[in-house]
View 1 (tube, rainbow, N blue to C red):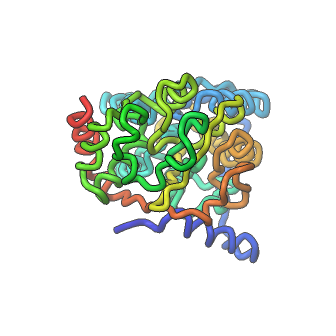
View 2 (cartoon, rainbow, N blue to C red):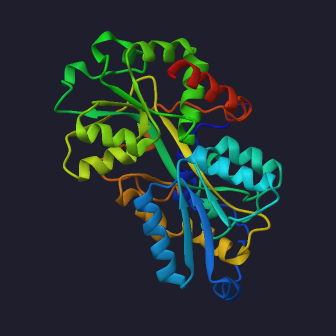
Length: 340
């Protein structure tokens, strides 16, 4: 069954906020004294490195608790976590990645502590588990962006299908779903909707595959490729802030909006510090950090980043999380077979 699309849920959440109709629910809380006694929290995350470091520094400044940060692509984060769990070792306190389907699968295995802190209700239903096993840290818009000085406005791709046109040969770059978990949802759903022949045609168009969204942005920064395909929009915002001539595209056949779930890991070394950090992640300071850096907050009461559209104004491609959860190994394998 398809979960509700995020744009509808965001619209409904915003309406509820405006009408002050949020249902009352007791909030879970961390034991602050115990959290400070633990003194640290271990965080595995695929949050962009600059933002991850800002969050870690803010948390230490606010609470005095140190964040031990391990940052990599979402698929790599999940692989490391699952290997440790398989070995009977829990080394991490808080897990943040960008694969909601994987979060749901792990929640079913009771790997997370249900935790619904302050502001939990402000996060749309599609971006969290009802019991608090995970809650969105941010929303990721996955779309196309390009070098406006190297692609004429008349030549911009208006749809996903146009990317296979011969005029884009050797000009495209895309991240690898085996490294970044955001791409698992994007690739899986595009292949489901259009067939794997779409990616076979992209290969014929000499699309360059790089590990993650940072490398996609780097390729456009250097001008080695000029169109980012199904890429994370916040990196486009970074490039714009640096003065690069970047334009974000919103294909008429839709963009993706994918939550980045945060979970408190069951049996972790620092359980109260983990809860406090998870609560901090959806607090005002961190949630406002994302739009300030060009991305979308998870909470429905936080405005869109300056210069970016409200999500309700866009056509959003729904992600079938049950399909992605079931088919992730095949999605990664098929993609690798096409582009190896």
